[in-house]
Image (cartoon, rainbow, N blue to C red; front, side, top):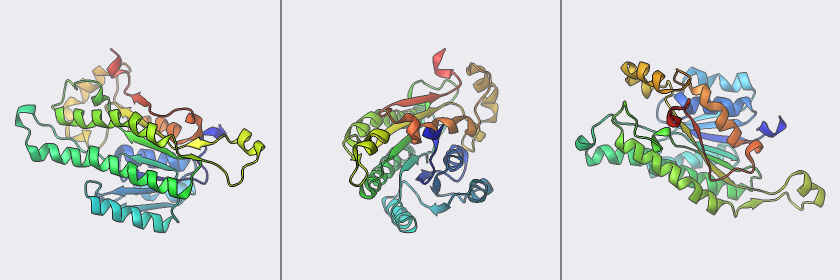
Length: 271
């Protein structure tokens, strides 16, 4: 199980103050990583408890990922506080709009693109630059897509959201290909070092959650029974149900995976 350990590593999670982002932050911390989060909403007590309960370092930064200036300032502050350490990045911040395709405005769609695509993309870019600069030997970027990138969600009006999450899933292998050339080696490695710890490139994968009980889905309580019927196992997910996939992709247990997507949807997309 040592392959799943994140002891001594540093992680950054956007949208980490609540919902799936908070679950990802806790999962990474439980595996041993120090965790910083970027979010616009204040951190919940659940995040504030992580440091003491998991024995790791945590930090919260108020950052708007849709703003180039706010994102750059957040990274600068994070780099300064954590001495440029970064091994894991999980860009999870995202928004949705329940609107008919024929009623969408340019601004509505632009808002989604600004957070779900541009914010995620440039979070990953800044994280990758920081990983390259610090020479991490365990670089892993875990983008958060959605099962909405695979299907037309039958119970929601989310054409623009589906498009943004499709963009996330499509960019994953392309970014992974470019980042594969950044292989980190121990300083003056010996043959035994290379045998025990093969060179690692910076890996890029994605997760596609299904229906999850979060603040975002809380706006649709009337849809819960329908979502439960759509899942093979008859229930919607709690954020903790998605957590394991994130820890797996962040850890050396997935060291031969890059450019891939893991669907965690209770089987919704499979029947």
